[in-house]
Image (cartoon, rainbow, N blue to C red; front, side, top):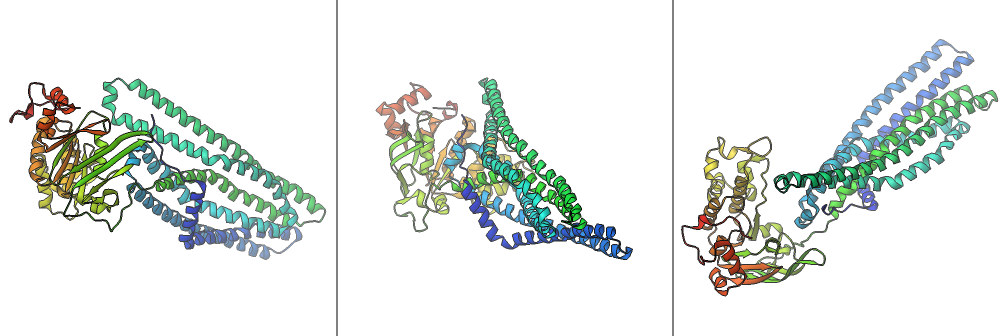
Length: 601
């Protein structure tokens, strides 16, 4: 099943954004149009001078007069070339400025996205918008918009010059207006939705391909290769159909437009010849008008050539702006502060659904005392990770509230929230940069001693000591690639450095082998002494060591108590413990923890 697509801005929103850009960059936009118009005006002298030369040669004149006209023609061409150069540069500066601004806004919007929405949409749609859509918009803003503005002004000025030369001959251009208008309106009616559909098929394709690559081992182990190949074939077929749809639009637009460009030149010569023989127009007027019609073909061709690119860019802009339409899932207030006298973490009547009508959590009530270590266990799909995310303030509850010190987590400013509570999962990212920069993300002002202490606390000192450049070692793409356990230790080191008051650990040591995970947990216990720790436990020795254990079943807390209390109760936790550790071992002897199985439910 493909992921949910992120929203797309409607035409009104795209036009409003374009109008806002035009207002904010009015000077640059005026400069582009002015320079393009001046270049067009300079180019209009050429046909008129050529018409005069033809007329004078026919009437009889001196070579000196012809030389003067030819010299003026050369000057007009040079001036036009110079103005075209500066118009092109002004257009590039305008396009680059707008594109840079849009990219920055897009990145800011992505970083502000609620994580729940990102998870629902998946990575494919975001990757496609950040790559293909930005690329399409880059072409439209850097070259398309300046070219269209220049072509539009050139077309308008050339038509004015044609009317001034001869209103009778200018009437020829009216023949092409109806078919051009009709085909352009027809194209614009269907093009936007066509390109949006095309981009959507690429998003789906990227999402499914990314999922296949990321889960390659599972695909191979479960022999799902055939299904994934079939899905890829369907994605390609959908993309092919979408591309053919937009291609049919272009195959209708361009032939009609080409015919409308060629027809006026022939009609101009025919009407000009008739008009000259009857004395309606002079040979100079016929020559200039014919050259103007020929000259008009270039900007019209430019408009048509870039019309398709502009439509693609418009669709891409709608997709990029759509990211900004996603409402926040939190309403932070600078006035909200936790009560330091009573810093309990309290969940009150929590309810949450990813899909309307399908509750993941139902009426969850939980109070975690300061300094307490709480383990959450239960079968897969029970809602443990979802509850962990709500307790960490990552997602906003659909019903009820989560508070720390009486302050709602979704009302705390992010900087304040991360001082109170932080979440660490088994999904970790190593950023391109040095080891120091990767760890210090949690606290940019941290000293080298603080960074080393954080790495030591998570048992990373052994492999860090072997690095030739130490903390200056480059990580990420085209540099040192950390293994999954090392990346997990790096994420935990960030957590130690951030030093929040409450930690939510969701399979935070799952990528380590059981012996290393047990040793790391003991090391972290010493470092995090006095901190509130909520562990989503998949290895039940974590639950055994916790102060209390919460058993999550079907979105509710089915049992809550210490390990020994729940074992004595003989309920769901006791059955889980028996199946995991063995019915004969009701306690966990010291020194035997490394022999425990690596996975629970």
